[in-house]
Amino acid sequence: MKRLAFLFLVLAIFLFQGCSKSSDQKDVSTTTKSSGVKTESGSNINEGKWEITVTTAMSGMPMKIPPQTYTTCINKKDYIPKQDSSYDQEKCKIINQEISGDTVSWTLECQGQEGTIITKGRLTYKGDSFEGEVSTKIPNQGEMLQKMSGKRIGPC
Image (cartoon, rainbow, N blue to C red):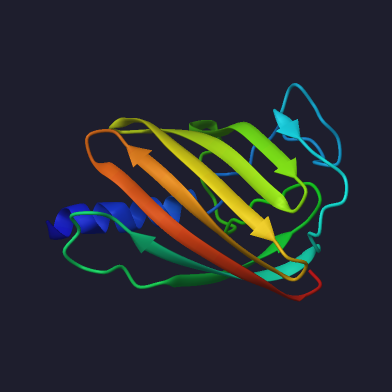
């Protein structure tokens, strides 16, 4: 069971270490067929450096995973928070992203050892803060729910 908990912790870290970045993603201020980004004007999303806190929960996991906090820059090209790191961008791809008012939602597909991992996220920005959830379905392992909160701490 400890091994399973460790696996999910590693996966959670992987998913938020930049797996959400797609090399063909366009500026989110327009709608593009190739990136699947749909937007509405009037967003209350402020660009800059953000501090993000992620709390992970999984049913059946005996131990609680401590919250993770990191900083990242959020801009009009990508409103999905992520950590910077080196990873194989070929394994993860945003298959849907939508911005409606102050809410950003997305579906991310990653290829893992167990098969296709599907992550769906939804964040609502309130100027210099946001709250939201990310749900990840892992083949033969179950589902992981992550609560996210963020606050803008300054310019990038």
